[in-house]
Each structure stands twice: as C-alpha cells, then as structure tokens.
Image (tube, rainbow, N blue to C red; front, side, top):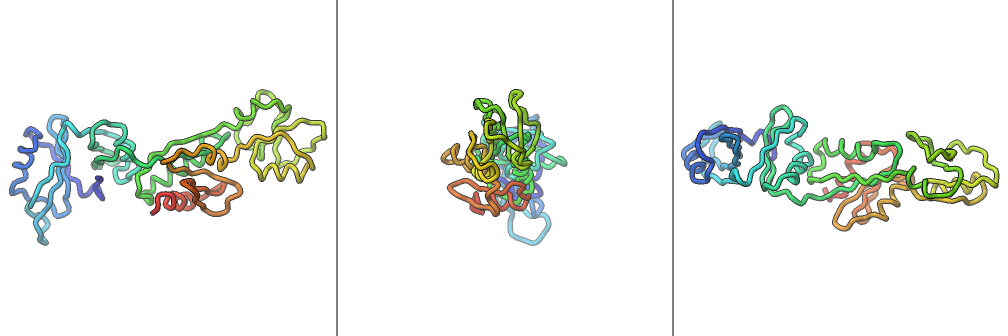
Length: 286
C-alpha cells in the first residue's frame, strides 16, 4: 500500500493515545477535505496511519463514513529523509526494506509526507557493468531513470560491478589491450594498448585482449592472428551471473535496440535515458 499522491495524506498532531479505540472515536462525525484519504497521526514521537472513506457529495469537506486503522505505533516507523521523493515508489521501497515495522512513514523532500506499507520483498534489479571507468554509467542511468517515476513497479537496485583491471592481472601476458581508452587503466605496471588505435604489433609480442567477441574479431582482422583473451563484456558477465528470481540489466556494444531475454534487459553502449526507461518497463511488464 502506498498513496497515489502525498496530497491524499494529511499530517495531524494529536493529544490522545494512539489506540484503535481512541482513533476511531476521534473521527466520529469528523469532516475531512474531499481529497483526503489518509491521516498520519503523531503523538509525542509515536505515529499511526489511518484510512478514511468520505460520504458521497460535492462539498469540499465531507463527513467521514468509515475509518480503517492502517497501522498503530508498534507497527509504524518514521523516517526524515530530505532527499527522498515520497511520490517515487523506488525511493520509498528502500525505506520499507530498511525497517522491521510493516508501515514506514517518510517526511521527504519539500517536507512532503507519505507512507508505504507491506513492501518487504520488492523486485531486485541487478545492474551488471564493468569498469573502469567508475562510477558505472549504467548504474547512474538506472538511478536517474527510476527517479523519473515513469517506471511504477518498485525496484530495489543492486549494482553488480566487475573490475576489468583485476580480471586481467591473473594473466601472464606481457601487454594488455583494451577496446578503447576509458578511465585510468593500469595493470600492475604492464604496458597497456587500445584496440581502437590499432597500434603496430610484432608477431612475437604476447598480448592479452580484454574485450568481447566483437573485439576479438576486430583483433583477428587487424593483426591476422589470435591472442590471449579475457571476456569483459557486460552482457556475458550478466548471463554468467544470473540470479533466479531477480531482474537484470546490462549494456552491450553489439546491441542496437532494447532487448529482453530471460529476465535480462540489454541496452547499447551509450544508451539514452529513454532507452533505459523502455528497457526497465519491458523488464517489469509495464
């Protein structure tokens, strides 16, 4: 349960014990604003949440027809988080899973107040990426996409990041070649080259190519031979590390449009915000 909008939630400080009996008695004969559907009640730092149904009519203030106690203080946590957008289910679900209480009231950005109830096992989205550079652009894009509110299914983001430099250190090859220059690439003092610059290589030089199958084909085409290889393709790393019951998203330079396969959404390198949003919506079935 989460209100459609914080405008539907009224915050009220009261001077009576927050028991079900006293709460129901308080709302007997009460008139409330036509849009109000919920009340967050506070008494001395303790909180309760109430749902109200109004009698039919066209007046701005209408009499309460019925009251449902959503949560009492024992089952209600309160969080003050000035960075939280209380209209965003992804922001709210992070607080829901962080507290043992079934209902979490949040005072967020601009002082807006809302709550979330019962969301203790949201869908987990594993964002699989490889670096350098860090931080991951894919993780940042997913976070920004979820902040838009265009994906309504609550998702809990779990970054799964691989370090290409660390993956290369185990190899005995003297020179490491990456597809392109990105971030600060240093592999234990070993020479580092970049495939997109097609540097000259003599046949005797031992090279470790850190890339994907496309990089491997390009190396073979440019240099006419094979070399040692470590696969750092985010798509392949995601496929090898799929967790049943969780959702996944990764990028791939061999993908030109959003694709979804077995709980894994793929976007192109340099994906736009709209492409990431489209991938997430397809992933959750919206």
